Image (cartoon, rainbow, N blue to C red; front, side, top):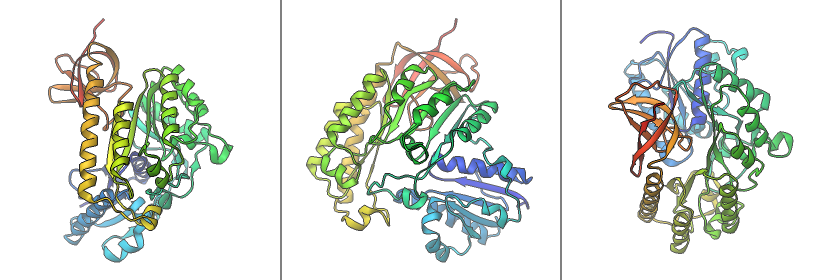
Length: 433
């Protein structure tokens, strides 16, 4: 254990990761030695960046805090500071239960950790980050908070109302990322599609994406976490016409049954959802859509679930994830609805839904055999180089496996002919001139 060393542990989403990366930059500006997500926690100071979205994420965060508390009791680490969504929402309760923690910080006041440590916050590098992803891609957060008010979601309770960053601030950060060697920018927010509404009184995501795509060195720009209601349709021509804007959109739809959508407070109907998806596919040919669906929401009937299954078969989403409803304290659904779908029914519905999607994914991947794709080479893993096409986001989507019989540069693009596919990955061969 060394004085002045810091371990930062990040749990949850990529938005948390960006916060951790900015905190690392601040620590290093103070001359501290920092490790991110170390295999073995051993620093004098440990910072845990927590997630509080759903029950499983909360449990993972609490378990990590407890593990570090035991390390502190054994004098294997020194101070413990907790930040992030879970700490924002439950710090009073957790403070009473886990007194070993030296400081509790929320989603936005984590700069106070430096002050608590007797260190200085460097405002002049507020947008600087130490990239913890592979150096050729990075996440860029364009807003905080959410105004949507979905019945099941605690995010607005933890992050507050939507707050867009200025375009100039975002563009400045993007240029800094490119200067560090980043080629692929993953644009993130709790809700990208609301961007600008709070300051310009209308969505201006299309303008922002166009300006970001104009930055020399941005070879791929990928959009995450859109919302179907009041989607800025002027974004679609930008996605269609700009070669460096990936034909990829991550839009959580959650359900298709009108009664469930109404109870979820999604402010969209089944008919409107289908019309919305049809327009996206018409205006951006070849786009790959990723969505997230929920089963077992309070009041979900067998008929509601059957509609959801039919919807997935009908839409044939290129990418899909799903999860079972988990009641989160303080949300509208926790206060006003009874969690009346038994856990075994939730899990059976989830398993069946994912089996349907697995068959769809296998068909979609098989259709790529014999076609060539521009592919980012992410890493070497065993006997294969692992890459991604523009239709694949890191960590959640299928990857392209390329036999490592010829050396390939990590972080560069290559044209790859797909030779084989399964439900999870593609296999390919680099084309040589």
